[in-house]
Image: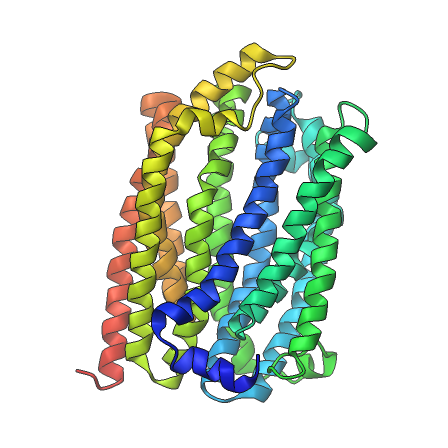
Length: 466
């Protein structure tokens, strides 16, 4: 897309159309990648082995760290690139993109090495039992130890492309990898590898898909850099000035911590679930996959919103910025309302997709699915509160308010959700553990709205609007 069209998208295009242009491709890629994660769970569920399902639930925590690390430079750098574009500082935007390119590769390599060295202690800490640790090792070897570099680089490039206005290219890369994974999963799980290695097969399929997606996104990034303020040259990375490096980390660290704290909450869920039984852990793992459907849509809306908010914040068109925030909020809350209705009505058949009751261990599968349906009906109520938290956090990141983003992340997870998780689990068992999510997210949403409202009022005063 020519630079003039990008300018029109950010500055003049009607807000619903602009948000759709940026968010729809992102939502599609979020859903496709979610589907391929679900396909992993679906095919593993065909074995009827609840211990394999529990093992993949444990590894979700480690794969989410890939997302956290990509946010450090993808969101931190991407939001800064959008703001620099709004200020017409394209040379500085190039330096930012190049720095983020090399920094995310170095970080991914470090993460892979650490996990390789401390794999067994980490898995035990996450709640792996003797029955699940072998399967968890299979998955982590390919997806984390070997696969972190292409995964983190892909996600970082997608964030940067999206914030520069190339949402469709970013989404094509991520979606293409997801579709390829769906094709490769059954091939490696049930044809190439022998019985007992289904988890390894799913992991190899994921690794190959992520490598292909990374190669495409590298091509798209290089192509976009011909007209956009993007670069993957080491020379440009070295020219990054200290103020912009500080700005990357000011937003990137809170964004990474937000995902990291979400990951910490999942660790706590896994530890508490596994303390009840491996079947409760497997059931919670199924629910976490299902509830990611509305979350994926709402995160896609917020990711599409972020570049428009960032650009107009820095260019001074604060009315357009606030209008974008309001419209995104209406759309996201509507999605959440529909998802609650659907999941309350269809909890049993939806969770039943992920685990067969006609395979080798039907009795444990039936118990697992009964827990899953109960947990889903409770936890899906959290969806609108989660969206308010996402919306507020992405707005603060777009405006460069890193400290406020970090404060919200800490309060949301460490003050509200995680303490409530332990308290309700102690009082009411596994049902209380499920109830902690809507209760914690509701309190977090109230805090987020108060914090964002204060920042927007400050922004109006500083711009002389009142």
